Image (cartoon, rainbow, N blue to C red; front, top):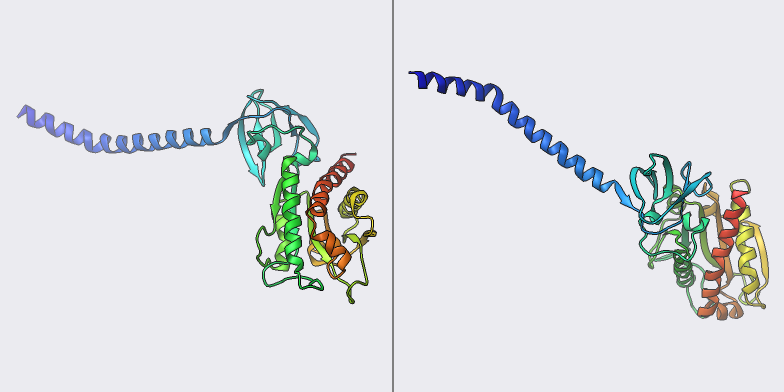
Length: 297
């Protein structure tokens, strides 16, 4: 009889307390596991030294010192490649996330290393662009140049985003949004010009649309950087206003480069040269560095 009563008491106790307790234990276990995973995911150890940090998001924001190899950080927020972090001294700053995640050191970390640059190789896919006298398509040369510039910028640590990296069509109206969605610091669209009559024009031009958002300064700095090493028989037409959708509808500093006339046999000869492509690719980062230095003044 006594055993029956004790059994009944245990049954009541289990009904009232054991089930809720089990649920509580499960919930606590899940919470602890989730928290541990999140903490592990949001913590990072710096792998290279001298990474600049800022009081706000962006390469032009006021400096707040540098990070060095071995520092442990807590990531508080991610915003288009940038991290808001808490340092070991409990200070909260912003840093270019791709530099924090980088494992290989750079020769030198510069403002360009902290920048996001969108490169737009003009045309692509069914949109072949201008055509040379021999039937060469503009889209081929714009992609080659864009890929070469990308490699040079990535050597500097730059975060590079391509509107296309293969022979595909990107709708014209979608191109400016790539820069805006990624909060790019600069946008460059690559093209090769064409004249109404073959072999009637030659030269290179750097176009801008907006004057007051940095686009004009960017056009000047890039044109100045590439001009000295361009072929002597290709006239520099300088920087000019251009009403092109990809720079007109772009809110970030944006330029469009016409790097020769594809229906000029003389210019096309240069365009087909790897040295020509590589030289422009090496010089463009210098122009971008100059532009960023100007913005910090």
